[in-house]
Image 1 (cartoon, rainbow, N blue to C red):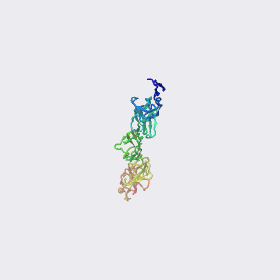
Image 2: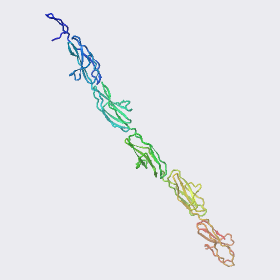
Image 3: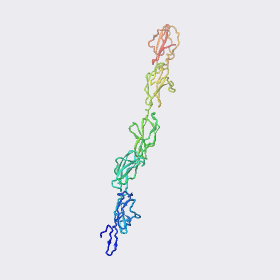
Length: 483
């Protein structure tokens, strides 16, 4: 039956008056914020009062979580307006307006609530890593919930998460980590156009410090042949991962190195060396291999004395010049070799320095005694002696003494003429020539064939003088032997 919109008075035939209240019409609802982020505030839903009926109105707000299929009263929500507060799920609201004339519902207000905006989970990457090594790839699952249109931005922190900075251009769910030179942290920022920004889990990369070699010091250089080179010591390497191992290496040409067996600590004892060597320490770390500075131990060549040779004759006559000595230079050793000539006149038992004889060669003065010569080659590495040369010096020549004068009868034969003191000196060999003189003065006349060390004069009828000229076989002298 149609409802009357105004009160009418009907006069019955019986005269009884019936009053009809205006049609009871529910109010309307408006307001609220929709769509809404998870746990967001809806704001106030504003209601307009109903009209009609008897005008005595009460209200009961209801909500539905299943799209309007099921409605439940909201406790205490009996005002004309309603503030649902923060919502976690999409919810429909309406108000039941009640009057003595009945109960009618308002229009529905639907508040759409986005699912909770949740960050994805980041996985991947490699840590710890060596300095300058690629960190691999980080991959995140997509964010969930929130309004459509979530975007992404990778961020970097190099101060343990205190400060974060966007990585330019990195807006995908995967990030390729380049070469890292310091410990770094990464996270993905999930940006929702309506529900704000949240952050994924943090992935931190421990980056070892640059693996650097230690410094090698020590050793004796330059050094003499076959002497102790001392000890090389290295400081410890720095940086890198745990587990560095050490290995000393050596080279005899400074180009090709080989391991020194058993030398795996920070020090190595080089021992005696007979050639120039190069040494270095190899440091092996999970982050790579590096080498110390090279220590070059310079070894002088073996010091070898020179040799001397005589430019002259030996044996020689007494008080004559023996010639000179040539000498080859000493070889090897340290720079600065000096020379000192020495002589011995007692068969090598005692040696004395020859004053001023400090060159590689030497020219001795005339000698009157058999003398041995050598050169002392003096080097900071060693003092050595050359070979020995002996200059044999013949004794001084003496022609000797012949017998005394004789007196004989006329026509008699003198006694044989002989040496009372034989000749001496020189090489010990002599030749003889007897001579005669009528007055004991020059000129003396050679007696033919009288060349023995004795002479038998013939019978004589007048006085005469005799002597013999003695000549040393080595040319060491010639002279008359006189009585």
